[in-house]
Length: 166
Image (tube, rainbow, N blue to C red; front, side, top):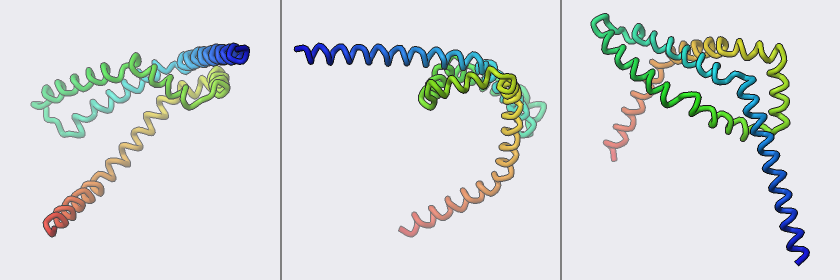
């Protein structure tokens, strides 16, 4: 009977420690989200995405007579993005990603870095870096589209030939 009591005591102590550890890590994760000002970063990214989407009308060759149609779809797209990708929906998912990928010690180190002048500078400049990176990616993607379309056409033709020969 004493062994059973001892085992129960050990299990309770371990689970309490684990809960406290988890609670401590969660508090650090929440602090990290605040220090990194993630909600503002997400809002800046959305603003940049909206600006790029506004350029879509030019890229699509929307005529002045079609602008109202484009604007209607654009408004719907922005509304969907704001509803489906809101910070309120993203925050718990982002916190979970950090929780799954970083130990509490690593989170402490990341927090310490982001509290430095260099860390704050990185956070301020990161949206611009991301925007430039996205622009470069889009440019590279635009250049590859004809090649990908040609490849897709060839694939369709080869699949059609293969199916017809069977």
